Length: 533
Image (cartoon, rainbow, N blue to C red; front, side, top):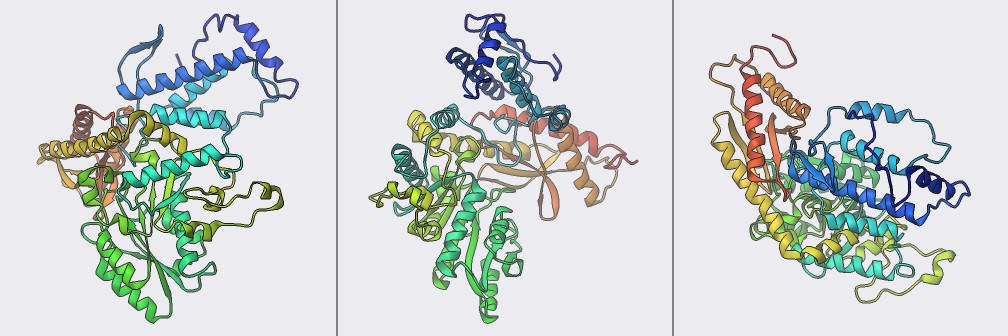
């Protein structure tokens, strides 16, 4: 079956022939009610869930395995990426506006399933080892579906009393899981970028005011791009953003920070913010949080910890030790859609003094909302007063349901499993003559470089870096695994992030073996990176 064909539709759907289903579907559309008959909705819902379930099964099994679902053969389990994705995307961009109703909504659903399967990479795949994967849980998917299906309001207790209470509970559970003081609270947002923006807004308003004259912020060159972008949005000019070169351990150098803050104060600026990393994306390294907390406390600075990726390591004993000092931060960002295994678009921001969120974002309600105005009680809050969104997606339900179904111990075990897998992977790489470990394992991230064969032609550092890029491209082109190189110490290296709890030891070793084969072929060739001899 080619990528342009649809998955076959059964001859009978819900007891109706397909042509009756099509006409029944159309009958609810032409009158403008935007509804479908109940049996059509039920059949479409069943098919959507079959597609989601098939995807989950395929992603969990890895590439190249045959299977069958409910009597229907599935060609093979999911490749981590499909080489035909660009062609599919090109065809979609120019599609004309559909003026008429779909002739066969079930076939449309199947076509969408095909597009999603073949048109994107799959971050929930066990061999997706690039960036920070998003290996979800079925409960997170169900929570997202329930929230959308019930059109749940979450910004306002007047219309969303239960959803607001569930969000408050989920935030409190997250605080407990991370080992933070019960004083911390916050809200769910769309991801780490919005969490950082929310926290930095509270910091600015608390320490330098909304106009922020002379306000100056500090972080290392390992910090996520969302931080300088958030400062730009907040009106902190680039001339007042201090990006400090990281030390040899890829951490912010505290001595340099101390000197720079003192210098800026002498120059009449107003230092107000230090952003620390609890797990850098490239290498999983952690800034010296206790020292930074002490310095910020003495200097009256706000310490924000970007733990979007790494903060959930605190669910484990060794992760909590690596993140010592996290509980001294003024604010923490965390992405449950990463190492807490929720659907994408599930972020959270936590503040030691959550009232700062109300000071930054609280507004007087307009007349059309006054009827629902209520005073905040113990643990109660209207979340529209704590962030930038009024109408909000019910993101908290995903994590709430997942913790209720699996329990906290299962999440602790899943996080620990990722860290153990990284330990094993690093040990395996060290045993390979083709490689040497560069960093880690740190928070389930390992980086390593290739060692050219003894008989390989001499190459410049830039050419060796080019080989790393080419090997990663070769691997992606095969659909075998998703591995993306990163820069460490000015050189390009291979990087594996193994937080997915469905990652198997032998599966990761197989990826390392394939990288070794591709590396040996590329490094031993007389051809130069880029195709020249």
